Amino acid sequence: MLLLALGIPLTINLERRATAELETQALIQAQGIAAAIGAENIVQPERLDAIVLEASPQVGGRVIVVDTDGTLLADSSGPAELGTSF
Image 1 (cartoon, helix red, strand yellow):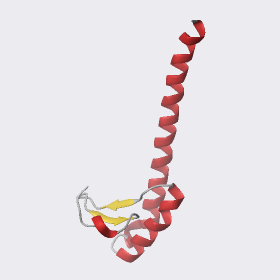
Image 2 (image 1 turned 60 degrees about the vertical axis):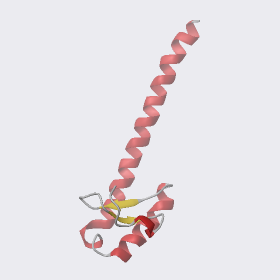
Image 3 (image 1 turned 135 degrees about the vertical axis):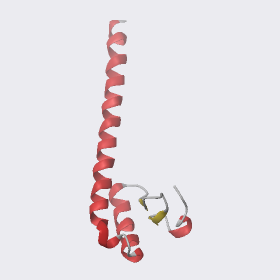
């Protein structure tokens, strides 16, 4: 019974730490992609597409770029949803 009482809080703590680490890693990756895009590439659709396509396998997921209004500018999954609001 004592092991169970100690095990549950430990499991919860480890789960929270893993989630926090994942969130931190995602934020770092997003900041790196944003730096690669920069102000000069945000207005160049071909370059923007190349950056998100290159970044997608590096982060192991979908990469999207939206403007300040939430309009989709680039998507590593393809152009089908470009112009839609997120």
